Image (cartoon, rainbow, N blue to C red; front, side):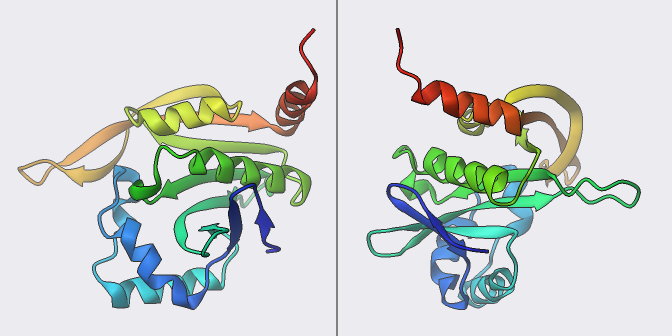
Length: 192
């Protein structure tokens, strides 16, 4: 993947030396949906960074100033055995909470969306958001995504005190290329 930049960020492939920064936000994920990605220690983080370095699925969000990895974005093409859906991409983001509320998530996601639509020729992007993850719900809406539905008791990422799975509702958001382009054009048009 060719790296790209936004105003304050550089989005690039992970590199094997990114383990410590990856551990900083995946040691104790803040969202239930990332619990399966939790890293126990620096060795596990280094191994995960090496694995991610050979893939374009998860991309490192780096500060231009200093190069620190502060999170990741991902765009994974929809798999299908019957029809070509390679232009339909699942997207998401995970930011180190120490860098929250600074606008980095929206900046990185906008950069990812622009890259997916213009460089990788995506037609449709969609995101799954745990119901109640207000920050990601707002982010989807700020990106121009529309809520398409709610999957009731869709998936379990955690167990209750008795060891039984807690099934959570999941919202699906999506945006089409022409909606993204129309939104981008509207933001460039001066108000009357």
